[in-house]
Image (tube, rainbow, N blue to C red; front, side, top):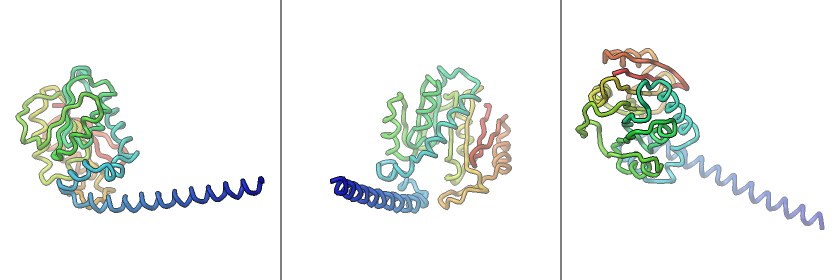
Length: 229
């Protein structure tokens, strides 16, 4: 009897291992397809990705979610204003995870997400953290000196004219407010969908060109700065 039980258990375990192998292979294959799709770096692709749960699982991997938590923590530590009442906008907010992490870190005021992909709005609102969402570009908005904190993380490397976007961010930031920007380290960034590749040195020169006091940091292959407006 024991022999029959062990034989049956081994058969069940073998079935489970084979199923896991198939799932693992499918996940890997889907991930490869996701990378190929996203390399196109078009607005249509991002619109498609934010609307598709299957694609989102390959976008919202643990390392990306950890990155949002780390950036939110750094911003919260460096922000010199009143977090409880600060108004904040995230340019290219994507799924809104960074805004949600800011809410958890004590930012109690108005938190706004802006993204060119309309489908991102459903993801932003799904956090249930009283987050606003606006589709479109910063240049479309009539905001002027409206926000205490402006975020732009992992966005500028995708854009044709990043300097224009930084100038627009400065325009919507209140006097005494701050702007947080991150871009990948161009020396290690090999993703073909990106347009710009900043090393820590070239990123510092790029930011210093706006002649605004800035704090720089570097972590996990990421260039980080806080502009003090």
